[in-house]
Each structure stands twice: as structure tokens, then as C-alpha cells.
View 1 (cartoon, rainbow, N blue to C red):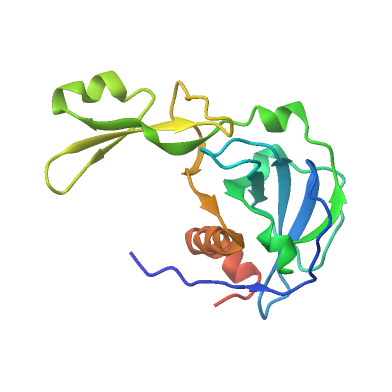
View 2: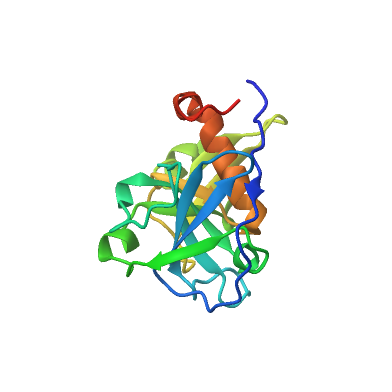
Length: 195
């Protein structure tokens, strides 16, 4: 497997405006005219003991200039993240409009791998856990069952379609997710002339 090339974000403009549900923002790939979009789904999600982490979606389809979208397609979600306001405060996320969060977005099949739900299991328990846990076989022979939770710490009863780590990401987590997406989709890299 080849190493993932890290694409960094370019500074856009600092903002201290209040972040609201439905805010659509862009990030720009440094040294390229390529913008990826994100949307704030909930500014009051639950992340452990932290208050008000920002639950965001990142979208797959980039543009070569900032386009104010009429809607955000829930079928175009690249990944999910918990974030803080650093991306806006430091000038790497630029809010371009607000599109109210739709019921369809709230019902997207997503989950965060949860460190608190699951754990080491015996090989005999694999079948019992496999419908709603990812089963990881560790190098030392142990077996780990990883459960998923939604943005409010409710345990998912299945393995969701869109998953990510249960972690609070800073704005650099967004560039990492975009870098992984581009690595796994070389056709997008080629289309926009990225190395």
C-alpha cells in the first residue's frame, strides 16, 4: 500500500462569527484551485464530557471555484467528524452560506467507532458481535469488537455505511480526511491535476 500524500489547506479568512447548524463552509487545497465543502450538522452534539463539539459532514465533490450550493446532497457525504471552531478561527474554513439541516441528513447511516462500547472478546463470541461490531484480529491473537455510536452517544445496532473514529478533530483532521479521500480516488486527483 502506498503512502498517503498529505494535502494541506490554504488560509482563506479568519472568522469569529457564531457557528450555526446548517453553515456550509469551504476549505481550499493549498497551491491548487480546488475547494472541498463541509456542512455543520449540529453545534451541540455530544462527545464524551466535552460540551458542544461541532458535528460536521465533509463532501466528496470538489469545485475549482467557490460555488454557493442550493442544497447539499446527503449521498455525497465523504465522512463525518467532530470538530472545534479552530478551522474558522484560524482562517482555514470559510462559511459561504447556510442551508438548514434536512431530516434526510440527520438519518444518514453513520457512526463513530466507540472506545467505550465493545472490547476484547473471545473467538467463540465473534458471531454474536459481528452484526453490529467491527471485528479486529490483533497480531497477538486477541480479538477486539468495536461498536459504533451516533453524534449523541446512542449505540448503533449495526455497522454503519459511513464511519470514522470517535475523536475530536482539529481543523487539520479535515485536511487528513481529504488527503485519504484523494489517495483512494486517483481519478479525482487526475481530473484536477494533483500529484
